[in-house]
Length: 346
Image (spheres, rainbow, N blue to C red):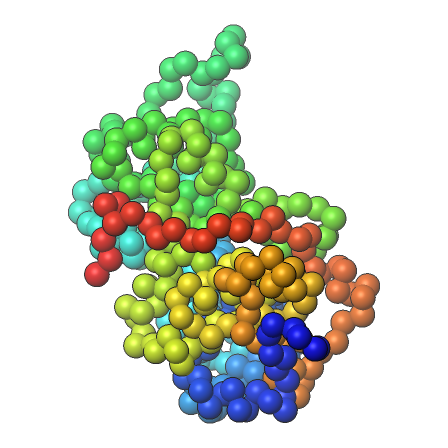
């Protein structure tokens, strides 16, 4: 495409790029799989890279499942068994690691708004938590007043070392109120899994809110800014750097979203590739380029992962419409690193 800001990749020119890359970091949904179905051609690309001696890391913003569960999913979908739990990074693991390094396993508890994935990762590191699951308003309010003026907290403020917020379908006003009250203590950490506005789903006409709206509600109610560990933010990158000796200049981030995957790569000095098999498309890249949002313009783009090894999978317009998300509301402001007074990274 003439004057297009990104370079198109396919099986013919990918080998030339491959020589300059040691590590590939892949997003999951929309890249390796879509919902519960494998993304055709993607396992072949992973096999190809492993045979070439490349490191493969899976980095997802989905914290609803643990790394162990995602490892089982990859195996079920036919991915190489070399890509297991120790090759996967998700916000649940980064949250648990962050709290563990801050000493949360040594006494204080976590108030958790989140799902099983976070619980599993906290359990692995011996971090105590409470608050997950249903917490009906009816258990705290008789309905005689519009607002809830008094609320009994399960733990004293001084015993709660962190409030962790991610996606949870049981989120309600009571959970919002409890989180905001625990965060009155300035020494209590506020950690969020991710700020994705929506989540992929089988019906493109249905908006499925993700963790972002929940995190925003707690942030507004508490007046506290969270440390967000998921893409495009730095904690996920620092977690990767602690686990693997990667050279950012010889690492490529591959994903289907410009506002998380491409931004993540751009912010941290990685090469970036957008695959058109998921969320964002060529039109989105052009819009970013024309409006000087260069942190969302990838270095490369490709039809899908399979196309890089000659196993390109084309979708009809009807099939694509069934899979692609509604366009996201994209943040135009640059990422501001989290304040060092809240967390220190080692």
